[in-house]
Image 1: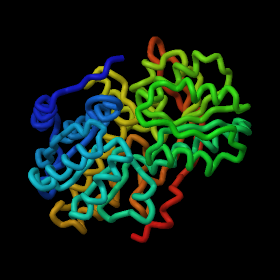
Image 2: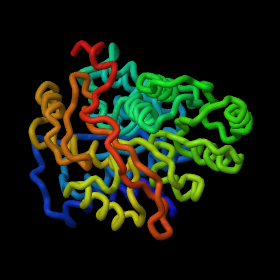
Image 3: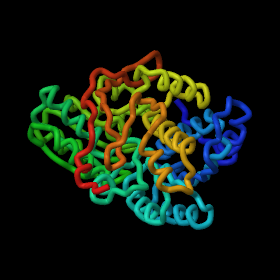
Image 4: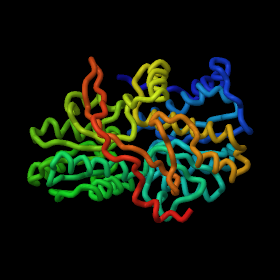
Length: 386
């Protein structure tokens, strides 16, 4: 399955023509300019492309002519992300920032942006410092707090009877949150714990350690191309151990690249294409029609982020920060996940599911097999003093 990458001109044309194509919603209380900084090239580009495409699909469907989106590629580099954020705030005069995939980039951008009075809506990265003591009234995470999906994986490992897991993740904020989350819920022992290099593609040394560890299971968080490389190499190693992971390594955008090696693997997610509600069914159908591929977790998060923003625009003017903040907090939009609400730290309280990788015709995908955690909040909300 091939990812499409549209140029900025094409995206802008799509957004501008949306009002002429679809029935228009009321334009709301005034114009809002959004700066989207996301990863559109290099490693992890598929994640940013999916967030962008999901977001822009919601913009197109809304027909709201008061929403302008400026999109830039951070190249997965913190210094580039900071530079782009400064340009968007100072030169483009954006009201809202969004789009960042990687937690190290979020930590470089979000605190400075919110300190300057801008709203930040995260469609992905949810590092623990921004959920706890570093929370901010202008920061909203529409996806999850980083630990959440890994906590559900730990809970599933308990239910599956695993007693001795080998765990690994990249050495950056989301990787540390991942292993922390798994360990918070997993009741067994650890056969090993490793932090790998961000962007690493050769896992021979790590697989050798797993082989020698005596583990009865493997948990890994390696998003994007890292997960593709690891799972292919692990599958080819001959090691016969069950693998558990979060959706990031088993999501729609990368499953075709992983192939047969992923079949049967259990992974955790707050979203899947088979969640049974009208909004999600329409989203899956319209995304596939628009882009020629099934949506991923990241696409659903981009779609929900845009619809949250659009719902706030219907209730308040972004220039009235208190009213706009209250409108975002109310989260009165139809989410692909069904019911949606924020906790006190502006992170979702939501169900997290256990999925299994299956094959539908020639397409590798996921199906929900259980609910891993119900109405789940995050461990850092108590430290947020908002």
